[in-house]
Image: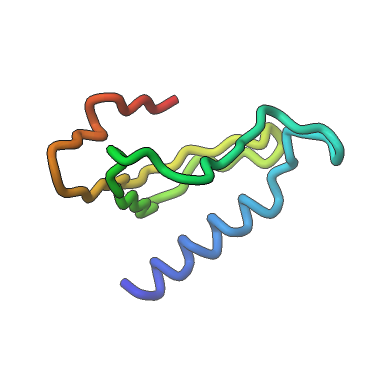
Length: 87
């Protein structure tokens, strides 16, 4: 089991390193400016990502399929899943 997981992680790392970037060296898509101070109503949400398998790897098209689990952990009345959008 550990050997299979290690192989999967190495394959995923290789894909991330080999896949060409979508942007030129000086080109930036979008921007992100962090808030200096979070809103008083902000609540922490922990997000986890667990890759299960990578398959149908096509290096020429820079395309692959990935099965994974994404999990969320939070306390309080906040429901982050009510506004979750995956694309």
